[in-house]
Length: 213
Image 1 (spheres, one colour):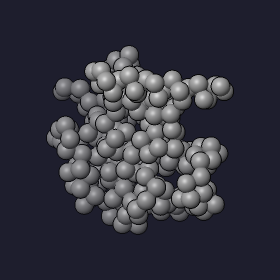
Image 2: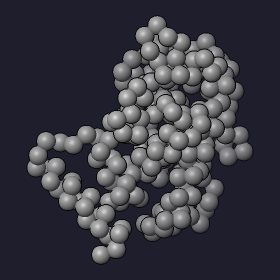
Image 3: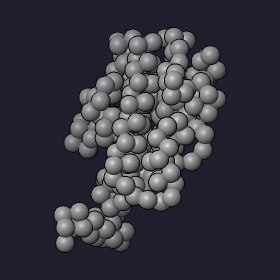
Image 4: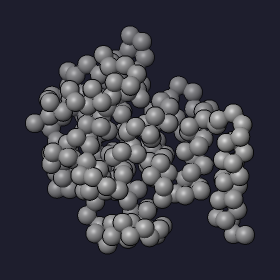
């Protein structure tokens, strides 16, 4: 067996074993799928978050594994933020904006081309990073840090998911295009990110969208 075939076999065996025992953590399952089927929707989202963890402006803020103490856990960001925005359907996704028509056609035909996948991952990471950096500039570096009690930081699972959902909304309304990927975020300079808790990221995104013109 080739190295890739062995990795797929090992990943499949891991999932089969854990389906009959205590469930493995979501982040572990997501990581396994990136090996077993990197073209799967959850795998694409996981690969994107892995790159975002190493890319400005989220570099150093996202946990790559359970041993990254003090950083933001990413399983929910993958499932509720990145998977919907990287999906290969709808007019609110990065795939809709992607202007590589040949690669898109091969994706839609079900062809699994590693170069196409990498091109889409690079496109997604570049645009999400540019979008988030625009927010960082608008709110200031002092706030662009992990939220802690009584601190100025606003970064959390809720905030990151809220911003990614905001990006989807702005793609759907045509406020984000290939030619103009970053809108005016200055209205967010006084936005109270920390007033939203837990899974209120959709509400946060809706309220932010009303401020972006």
